Image (cartoon, rainbow, N blue to C red; front, side, top):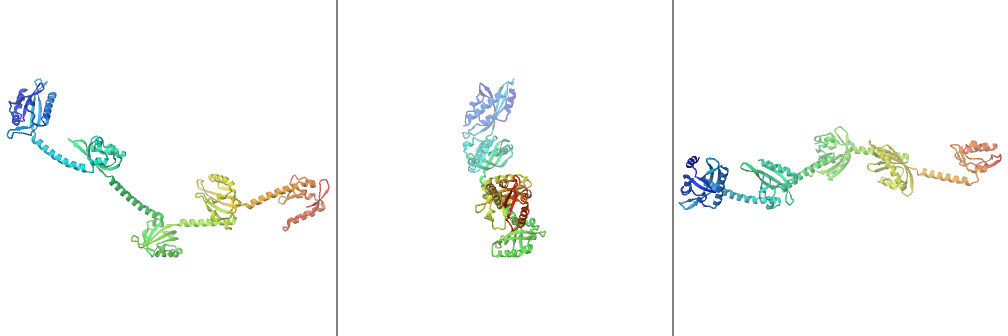
Length: 628
């Protein structure tokens, strides 16, 4: 094998020498002519020397170079495989100008195994001159460094954040623009990755963009960021893959603060939205507030009609153009409306009371209209009419008027106070006639809210409330009847009886109470007077020696005092009829006279007193002389 390598060695075109490892040193055993040529050394002066002694230090990089050579040789011994040093500097002395010329080499070391192939016996060391290539690289490097210096100035002066991240998202490099945006220091940022600055709700999205970039896909997006001091920012971010030797080792990025721009755009968008909303709202309000909107000239000819004319009247707006508004107004209303409209030449605004306007089906619809003179406005140049349909209001108003008239007629016919109580609004309308006042109060005063309950007697108010509440809550109850005392304007109390019909919806909820209130004070007073008279009558019958009697003509029964037995000896346990008890006890000669006299008195409306003298049989057979 030695002979084979010797043959190859002598013919090898690159500068080469043969080294033998001896006790930790590398002894030169042979060099070829090319090696001697490029180094300017003689073969005899090199063989047998340690390589470190044969090529002493001649540049600032020598010690480092020798370390690389020694490490490579050791590696060949250990692995028994070739090893290469891509670049090593060793300057060559030029005798012509007596200076060392800068030289760069690529060194390659090949193992030559012993015959048993168990160990490395020699190492073939070759050197390839790379000076021109390395010097060009150095020149380019300086150019790059100069360009980078200029670029660095651009980067540092750039207000945008320029940075690079490794594959884990950790900051590798960045400019002052980024530290300013993130409100942090260079020292702090060097320890961090980008995630702490991401708004929580956007971390996943930002990570997705980062991962796509690591897969070789450049990304551009906007992100919500929170700075180190807590400022909420919006950044426009562009990131591209950072490739080295066809492998993505991280990303380069640019972050631009667009918070203010975004805020301004949002503000503009919001303003535009508000303007659009305002315009839509205005149109909606016009359409909602007024069923019809039109523009007329001073002769009331239509210049414009709103789209709502189709839905309200069944007449498309274009059919109004050029036609006179008074052609659609009811003949009975035309003169009044024309009189009002003619005022618009001297008044800026007028309001026209409800009038009838013809629709597509020849039906008359009621409208009330506001008229504004805007003939001098260049954007309008006409008379603006805003009309609202009030047909239902007019019809319901008439129905209500008729209902009120019926209530008043009912009140006049019965003498009662008629009322209509709206439970939804808790308002009451009362009707009465024949008097300017009721219970001493004006009609307007009685229609006030809470007026009635304030004048009910305090002893009866709570009971009335409970009865009213329970009755209204019971869906089965259709009527309510109450009696109570009501304070008049002079402080006295009237006795009232109240009868009401309850109007309910389909679910049984009470909506209204319509009823009549009757003043029964006279009846109550007469009843009380009768009770008092009866009481006095009873006391009188007990106190007198005369016999007092009370004849019920309707039932033909007679009630006598207890003195009747005492005076005449007859018992009075029951109320017998007059004929059987009284007339039968009058002696025969007086009986017919008394009966005829009594009948005549009862039949004569002009008489209110009766008096007779007669004789009456006692139970013991004696006669009693009676003045009756």
